[in-house]
Image 1 (cartoon, rainbow, N blue to C red):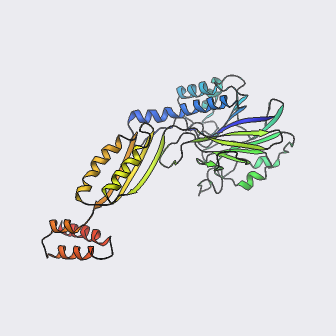
Image 2 (cartoon, rainbow, N blue to C red):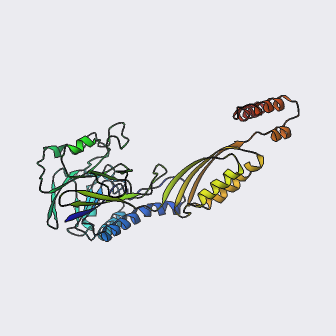
Image 3 (cartoon, rainbow, N blue to C red):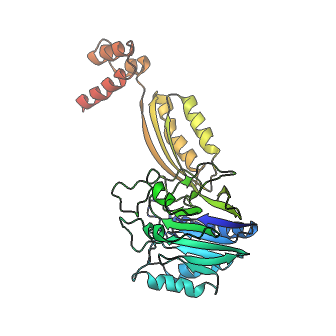
Length: 373
């Protein structure tokens, strides 16, 4: 006999996208986070999961519009397993400022479905014939130097139950937190709690890195819906099985739809330009948001094609940010057309082209242009 857990975190429902997107794209990215939750609930039902766990930051803020709370509750109500378990994270922390928001959600979720982990105390539940103890490490503010799990070390962990820790915050070696203000903890601090399994949130990348037949005591699902160009994956969550002997097996599943891609490409010939165009053409034009930087050197004729190529690429992706750092390639033909024979610039640039230093002619040409202004 085993229990099956769907583990996600950092969905950030209600996130507002302020980059230079069109209104249609902003609305689509906002709605995608709710649609992602729908897909995860459906997957959890298809996989016959017993528990659906959100380890913090389900919401982007503690001031969520009522319509968004209503939509969230409606989606959660479709879960067919035993319990939906939600932990408040550092974005949707639980205190007097957020109590009204969380109470509104609890009122809209059907009776008996939701377990809200707003206290540092053991929550007991039964799945089938197996007793499960949940050990929460909730967030009561946006920032804190406390890890919120020290209380567990003083608790008598029951060896005949499945003991699961759920917490949110940075983990040393996995999450950037130089100022130690995001509920910092170490793997050692998790280990000494002597629990069977930790379900973590806050870190937007997946851990472990493997995707199939994963055996671990600690899981970070990553954000399920990518939210910007610093997110290099397509969104994921964990499907975890805990057997009666407490052995654990898990697999990572893809959850996102839109994806963000950053490409920095060196372009030194027309063939390079065509190759880049073909590479980007393979992306999903409805779902890919691309930040493209091109650099290098092209001769006069090829340089004129870059504007045309930029317009073509816009049609290959949903959104494009384009930074063109390509410079004019200095050739002997260009020098002959641009400068009088035997003039200083003519002789100087030709001499540099004949040298082994390929960058020097470009730098010298830029300097000459500045002097001539």
